[in-house]
Amino acid sequence: MGARFTELVVDASDPERLADFWQAVLGWDRTGPDEDEGVVELTDPAGGRPTLVFVPVPEAKTVKNRLHIDLSPIGCDQDEELARLLSLGARRADIGQGEQRWVVLADPEGNELCLLRTQVE
Picture 1: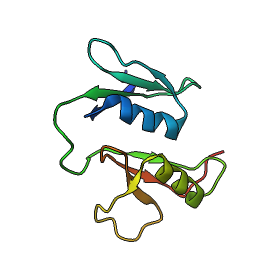
Picture 2: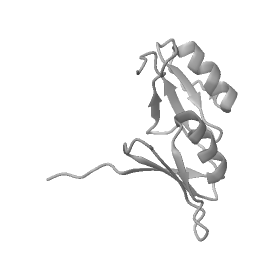
Picture 3: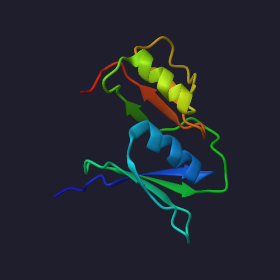
Picture 4: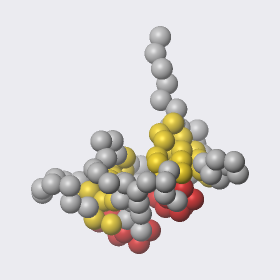
Protein backbone atom coordinates (compact mmCIF):
# COMPACT_ATOMS: atom_id res chain seq x y z
CA MET A 1 0.00 0.00 0.00
CA GLY A 2 0.98 3.58 -0.42
CA ALA A 3 -0.42 7.06 -0.54
CA ARG A 4 -1.30 9.22 -3.52
CA PHE A 5 -0.03 12.79 -3.87
CA THR A 6 -3.25 14.68 -4.56
CA GLU A 7 -2.77 18.32 -3.54
CA LEU A 8 0.00 20.85 -3.13
CA VAL A 9 -1.18 23.52 -0.71
CA VAL A 10 0.27 27.02 -1.05
CA ASP A 11 -0.17 29.61 1.70
CA ALA A 12 -1.07 32.96 0.16
CA SER A 13 -1.76 36.51 1.27
CA ASP A 14 -4.02 36.85 -1.79
CA PRO A 15 -5.10 33.38 -3.01
CA GLU A 16 -7.04 34.73 -5.99
CA ARG A 17 -4.12 36.77 -7.29
CA LEU A 18 -1.68 33.90 -6.85
CA ALA A 19 -4.10 31.45 -8.48
CA ASP A 20 -4.47 33.88 -11.42
CA PHE A 21 -0.68 33.82 -11.90
CA TRP A 22 -0.38 30.03 -11.74
CA GLN A 23 -3.46 29.54 -13.94
CA ALA A 24 -1.80 31.69 -16.62
CA VAL A 25 1.50 29.81 -16.21
CA LEU A 26 0.02 26.30 -16.36
CA GLY A 27 -3.23 26.75 -18.30
CA TRP A 28 -5.10 24.80 -15.63
CA ASP A 29 -8.79 25.05 -14.68
CA ARG A 30 -9.81 27.12 -11.68
CA THR A 31 -12.40 26.53 -8.98
CA GLY A 32 -13.24 28.93 -6.21
CA PRO A 33 -12.69 30.85 -4.23
CA ASP A 34 -14.64 28.95 -1.64
CA GLU A 35 -16.97 31.56 -0.13
CA ASP A 36 -16.45 30.40 3.46
CA GLU A 37 -12.70 29.82 3.45
CA GLY A 38 -11.35 31.81 0.48
CA VAL A 39 -9.60 28.71 -0.92
CA VAL A 40 -8.85 28.64 -4.66
CA GLU A 41 -7.93 25.44 -6.53
CA LEU A 42 -6.31 24.77 -9.89
CA THR A 43 -6.65 21.40 -11.59
CA ASP A 44 -4.98 20.00 -14.67
CA PRO A 45 -7.70 19.75 -17.37
CA ALA A 46 -6.00 16.59 -18.65
CA GLY A 47 -6.74 14.95 -15.29
CA GLY A 48 -3.17 15.06 -14.00
CA ARG A 49 -2.32 15.44 -10.37
CA PRO A 50 -1.73 17.11 -8.01
CA THR A 51 -4.23 19.91 -7.60
CA LEU A 52 -2.76 23.26 -6.51
CA VAL A 53 -4.67 24.70 -3.55
CA PHE A 54 -4.17 28.33 -2.52
CA VAL A 55 -5.13 28.97 1.09
CA PRO A 56 -5.37 32.42 2.70
CA VAL A 57 -2.99 33.14 5.57
CA PRO A 58 -2.42 36.41 7.43
CA GLU A 59 1.38 36.36 7.43
CA ALA A 60 3.70 37.10 4.50
CA LYS A 61 6.42 34.73 3.25
CA THR A 62 9.67 35.42 5.10
CA VAL A 63 12.20 32.68 4.25
CA LYS A 64 13.27 30.52 1.30
CA ASN A 65 10.84 27.73 0.46
CA ARG A 66 11.88 24.19 1.31
CA LEU A 67 9.74 22.92 -1.56
CA HIS A 68 9.29 24.49 -5.00
CA ILE A 69 7.79 23.83 -8.42
CA ASP A 70 9.99 23.12 -11.47
CA LEU A 71 8.64 24.07 -14.91
CA SER A 72 9.74 22.88 -18.36
CA PRO A 73 8.98 24.86 -21.53
CA ILE A 74 6.41 23.45 -23.95
CA GLY A 75 6.83 24.24 -27.65
CA CYS A 76 9.50 26.90 -27.10
CA ASP A 77 12.96 27.26 -25.63
CA GLN A 78 13.89 28.36 -22.12
CA ASP A 79 14.49 31.99 -23.13
CA GLU A 80 11.07 32.32 -24.75
CA GLU A 81 9.33 30.77 -21.75
CA LEU A 82 11.33 32.97 -19.39
CA ALA A 83 10.08 36.07 -21.21
CA ARG A 84 6.49 34.80 -20.92
CA LEU A 85 6.80 34.04 -17.19
CA LEU A 86 8.32 37.46 -16.50
CA SER A 87 5.48 39.12 -18.42
CA LEU A 88 2.98 37.23 -16.21
CA GLY A 89 4.51 38.62 -13.02
CA ALA A 90 7.35 36.26 -12.13
CA ARG A 91 10.65 37.84 -11.19
CA ARG A 92 14.22 36.56 -11.08
CA ALA A 93 15.34 35.32 -7.67
CA ASP A 94 18.79 34.82 -6.21
CA ILE A 95 18.83 32.14 -3.54
CA GLY A 96 22.56 31.56 -3.80
CA GLN A 97 22.24 29.11 -6.68
CA GLY A 98 25.20 30.48 -8.64
CA GLU A 99 25.46 29.81 -12.36
CA GLN A 100 23.07 27.01 -13.32
CA ARG A 101 21.28 25.61 -16.38
CA TRP A 102 17.93 26.44 -14.79
CA VAL A 103 16.54 29.87 -13.95
CA VAL A 104 15.31 30.58 -10.43
CA LEU A 105 12.25 32.80 -10.30
CA ALA A 106 9.70 33.89 -7.72
CA ASP A 107 5.94 34.08 -8.17
CA PRO A 108 4.05 37.27 -7.21
CA GLU A 109 4.17 36.35 -3.50
CA GLY A 110 7.85 35.42 -3.51
CA ASN A 111 7.56 31.61 -3.72
CA GLU A 112 10.53 30.21 -5.59
CA LEU A 113 10.16 28.21 -8.78
CA CYS A 114 12.64 26.98 -11.36
CA LEU A 115 12.45 27.11 -15.14
CA LEU A 116 14.37 24.18 -16.60
CA ARG A 117 15.96 23.97 -20.04
CA THR A 118 14.33 20.63 -20.86
CA GLN A 119 11.48 21.07 -23.32
CA VAL A 120 8.32 19.02 -23.03
CA GLU A 121 6.23 18.25 -26.09
